[in-house]
Image (cartoon, rainbow, N blue to C red; front, side, top):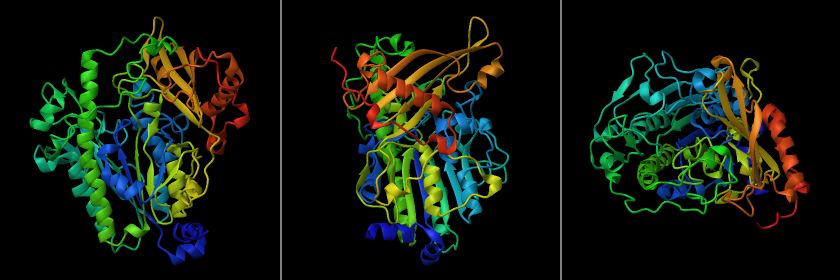
Length: 528
């Protein structure tokens, strides 16, 4: 009861409470392509956020790919509604595909008196902006090559309001993670120490995503070929101070690693050869260098928390740590990749600390990245002006953050697609749609053909005929080794999940709050 009263008072429930306590600030910190098993490189995140906040251990990126996932955070919508269906035009995506870009979380908060700031990796495709995207008081996004795919940990440009990008060179102090923190995050926080209005700050860091480095021990360790060349093969690049960290770290080797029998998997996996020695060496290098690069991000988290504390703002600031999506690292023979409906790509870290939020609590029920926008709006006590409204597909996590229960029967939509490819006659699009529940993961793979490339690029997710299905009981098979889509004892479950998939693929707003009734769960299938 006491915790609930504190949450109600501090998190802004009602007009009277808003007068008694300041509206909370928000600092949202993203890593990029964070694979499972990498939290060992984030001690400050564990100490300052997990131990002092709430961890959502089943957080799902509904479309596990950079641009669609970031667009979902900005809008609270799934990709089939916000329009960004890929990273570039051939995938029906890029920032240019975002429907009504002015209707976003930053604009909503700005309309409610918040200062809004952004620094780091924006949505793919915005390479040379002449002005900041709508909704931001301060926008410091990476531009040029850094704003459109493979970024560099050195020699990068950041947008400036006058249109002339600020360049960071190859000096040790120019290391991207450190520079974004020192030059943008901390000054933004410090400037609001005595400001009357609350703030919202989104920091989109690069680690542990691969990227270009420089010719130093860290770059040479984490590259095949020259660290500065785009025709080479780079992992994440750590800063000089961490060049020798995690040299012998062993990446996770779950039972799904280099899966022996993939005969029950969809065609795209069935045809994969076992991992080669080169594949395994790259997986190991990606993991070790990714951990070392994450240490710099962890330093950033520690500095941000300390600045909030030193400026007296920590007590009324909500801090969120998450990632755009996960990444495959050898599971099911996929050496490196995302945009796959498997746990390693779908699962993201999600830790939230703030006033009234219980310390050291874990919520196991499924939640989605679409939930972050409505959660932040709810905690801010914000109302969206009519001219900025858009249907929000996610649900607020405020009850769970106040110590209450979260819906354990929830079904999270899953979706994704590949880039448009040439077919024998015209163009083809492969995509997938499905749902992820607390117990089951169900996916349908689709293939559609179009005569014109424009029609293929704009095709809805899930268009065409079904070519494969996957169904996994995550309770008995957490590594998704046995596809149960044809298991007779789960026929009723499969039909129920297929109906939910059809709803999820076209849902909007409150209609996306789907549930999978426990009564639909059948007996455990027979062992093979």
